[in-house]
Length: 265
Image 1 (cartoon, rainbow, N blue to C red):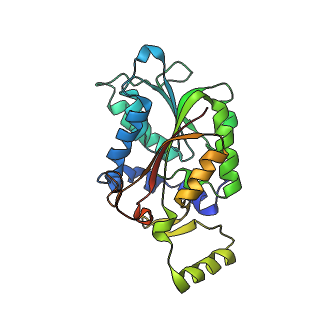
Image 2 (cartoon, rainbow, N blue to C red; image 1 turned 30 degrees about the horizontal axis):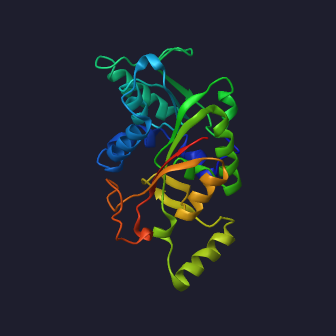
């Protein structure tokens, strides 16, 4: 058990069923295609393999972004605390070896490495430096506590090369905040449960367990990125289906999450 994680997240990162059914459950999610295009654009994919562009995928899950990196000339390290997710990621990567050179061997010279660990512990990368870091599908929201999220993003800069890119996705708190009396009652329930504004417990997540997740307001996310020393390159509000940006004429409160690309100066 990891003391850095909310108890519900500890259960999530030990669930075999959620890992084994992950790809099947989310296979029709438009975001999973759209965010790959967003990443490719900001990482300049495809890249020349000889130049050894390296990517750190934090909370890599079943490895869909690792596959994107491998097929576009990058080296990548995928980190996840759920060992069953890493098993699925390895299967996925190995199944593509006939088409693309994906290597899964110990050491530091292979194209793709899979590591089991809590991505909050940046010390595991003391000897590594990366050109980019990914935190997709609300991975940052799994980190409980605003102070802890801030400290983590500051430490993450230490493993990024100067000018390194950070790309992340989070959920939009304004979309879920209820107005008036219902909103006030919700705030009181949060206080009683010792939750911070934006914290949510998703009940019966995928029919398996309750799951803690933090949702961000646009202002909160912008301030966090700025306060931790990154420069925002693109801040995209997602549309309802999460397959493109929100139309400029619509209320930002309607955004179905955010995709952000930032640089470490």
